[in-house]
Length: 99
Image 1 (cartoon, rainbow, N blue to C red):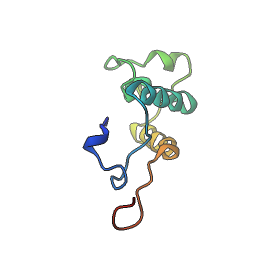
Image 2 (tube, one colour):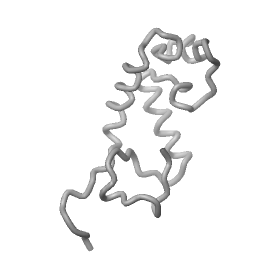
Image 3 (cartoon, rainbow, N blue to C red):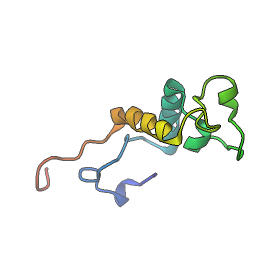
């Protein structure tokens, strides 16, 4: 989910990952995580994926194969969530507004 600063209270909204200057920076961060964890670019929406076919990165052994059944979608999603934790935006823990 992409959101603009005026749309979200970043101090209170849960499950936000990363504060980026622009969309390109966010996509680069996601691509870096995908490269480190062998996540599928197709399933992450970083490149098109043909139905019923493995992605190009799978042939190069750079994808664990969630796109072609070598890895379950649940395992892929779990590895993605674990990797995103380092980018989690921490909610403001106290009541009221700070100045």
